Length: 325
Image 1 (spheres, helix red, strand yellow):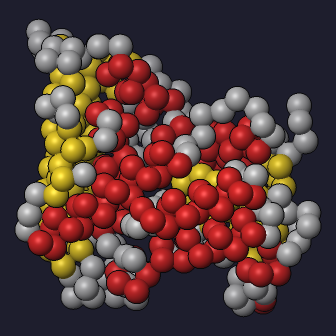
Image 2 (cartoon, helix red, strand yellow; image 1 turned 180 degrees about the vertical axis):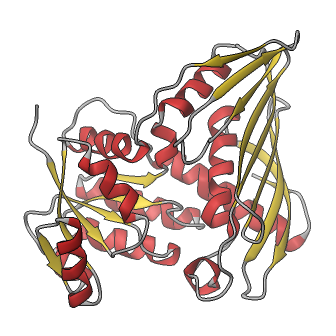
């Protein structure tokens, strides 16, 4: 087996806990360093998590010659600038979703990646889970006939005060935070949308607290997606075809996987799915790409498709019009 890829983490964000747990399950990943704008906080975090090195600035971590790749879990508006800085420092980058709501920034990031000869990927961990691949395989193999409809929801009771997800200056909002999963699912199963409509409720802090949208695809497939901050936890994915329906129990976190296929006769069958850390699989796929091995890492085309769709959804919601992509 190849030696582990040495990783650094920019910030002590809460999402790190899940990523570090996935890394700990893999012999291919070594989390070498963590950085925070507060050196004391970085040191305390490193001590608590068993990380060897800590830095009191992101720049200092990027200057560490032993760090080969960095994970960027910063607030949304900081994803692109810090990705560019990391690439300029010679680091491979796994950038937390969404990379950006701007297709131009996505294109710029991947252009910098190509110029540097490095690896860049948008971190949609659920896409690597066996459950997700099982659903995509069922649709691809015609298990429910011709695809007609995708229904996807993701919401949670996000604190509306003091949370970075509710700050417009940090590109917050329910679509950017959790609705992007629903968009990713629709695109994975149906391809790129040709037009979208959307309605949103803007909360007191100026970001979408709720957004509901319809995506239409060239072959007549329709997707209904919605996201929200001000309702209880909801995770739903239903895929409807001409001869059956797929229902997914825990589509985004994949912690309690379950896939059920129901045919026109009403008979339901469960599809066996392995329980495994999506974060471990994501990191290992990234490492394969770094080592130049065959891989299924999400790349520029997928990130561009996400950004174009999200940009169109916000425009549709803001202007009250159908937007053609």
